[in-house]
Image (cartoon, rainbow, N blue to C red; front, side, top):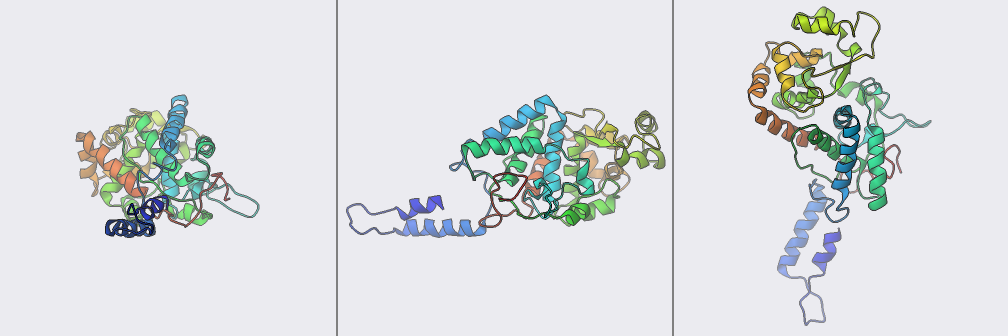
Length: 332
């Protein structure tokens, strides 16, 4: 509404009575339509907090330089936030005696980190622009900056999300795709959020970075046949048939801290770590897309960036909905 004052201040000079020109009236109408629609914009903080993006980028670069794995965590936070009732920062809310959040959901409890980085960013932004930048927008920008820090594609992040005052443990347990899903289940889970099979393959390419716990890939090692034998053998010492549940292994053994298309080459060579990974290249409808990304890195990067922007647009709170939390871990 700050621009509204500029429109209303369009006067004819030399007149004691302010009048609004036809062009000003049109501008006012377009402005009000834009406000009402609540659409996101990459320039949302250009006036209200011009240093917001540089502040987030600096904090992310610092965190990733100290621990490359942090990039995967910050990216994962956005996935796990947006897939549960939209991109509203609900995943950041801590439990209280009277409130149950999403952090203890099965997909989150032992796989999400990076909340302290979000806290640091929020504290810095509250000092320079109090009550302006939402936690939901911080998540989206931090994910993008993490990707770039590890060599991935840059893309503009639409901004203007607001933060939820609620969370859903049950939705977190049911909406986040499990590593045990087969191809049909994956396509359905992503389709339910408006994604195509192509989007599914592109977004799965995020597994070019990060690690997975033994408990999430043990069954694949010992029960599946579409796995490279030497690859499986190399994993078994760190992931025995019992014990070692929390032992970690790279999702992309080739280049675990670099964002590239090696993940897809691994799938073609039956070296996908998770069952859900290898399902993308297992004689099904997505094999051709995997092959396309193996041979064309630029296509993967472009499709991934577009799919990330699409994900960031999942049911955001805008306008007067939600709030701008001053502490990302609790409602105001």
